[in-house]
Length: 358
Length: 183
Image (cartoon, one colour):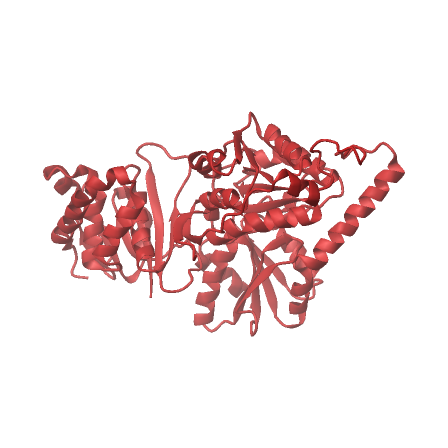
């Protein structure tokens, strides 16, 4: 049966999608602009229907460690927060990467640094894709640009994280989190049974069986030669993810002289700038990375011979622009335009910057 | 066809919910819709605004700085958004508390005496629906039936008894809106 089209906020869509995915647990601590995620979960009371646990932890640090614990048992567990809260979670994320645990983290970014503002920002790009915690690890990062993608990326994030036993993040901001759009929610899936988890996640610590040794989940290894081998294994896994899981969207790029590269909310604003540019006779296109890590560097590289210049638009002082410059090997001009601290640029501002490329 | 609206006023005037009802009405007509609220460390007496876009096609930016229609319910919002109305666009305002009325002559300006009407006719809870009625009269971007269907969908069932009062307010707004310039 076709699902009903609903109108809801991006944050609400994440909550509904989590219940429908068969998520086992959500652990969070309130912070604007993402509090609707836990609010919606509390309102929906999934513990009465699917059995999903929804728990307000005593802190962000507690919440990410509850995720670590749930994940160690092979459960589909998640947390959400906003920039300052996600900084607090970084130790836990690094531990999850080191222990090769799956799990979903949502960051509805706000202006920083520090406690900053509560308005939209994309200033946590570096933190997310370059490793906000310690050690050589990578975080699978999805950047939804619509309420529909907020819903869809819950399943995508969980699926990728379980495919590779690595944490995944949905990186978004208050524009996408707070706005309402049409959405078709994914279909309900039952939560995994203990038998299914034992079969699919044989490493899970669900109680020792007689025919095997105890499962141990840890990121600690005192022998550095073994730790190097662990790291090599992680790096091999990251290479596989980079080779297989890149996602992006190209809008009017085929005949473009100029590209805007932008993700999430900045991509939506840039799309309008491109529409106006096209009306004014400027052949511009939008390249929107959907996975920020793995970054669509290979595909972007192909544009170095096709377009005259690139503008990256980000709600930060210039972060993704570095990856775009690397991707095109600095062979064409790559400019950056951004607003800071919670200010969202208007399409006309972006258009003016695009014209600077000419 | 795409309609880009800003609705702005004081917190508590029903700015965000008016936008929500419009968005639901758009949903009823199978349009693409975005509803993007201003949000921040809000305080009583502060301003609130919402950008609503109704379109037949996929909507790009939910954030705008130029609008086809501005609905303005207080002086600070008028100062902020009067210049954001596209030439040839529409500005609808309630003159209550407005000491410096809009001055543009390249747009159509309408006034709805909603605040006074709402208090005189015992409809203060449906103040924003009077304004919405004014909008539907000057620019029927959605049908009245869709607004009523949208209202029904967006209100919890225990509030459905207020639907007739809301419809009455919308109809009243349609009656009292008047052109404020010859534009």
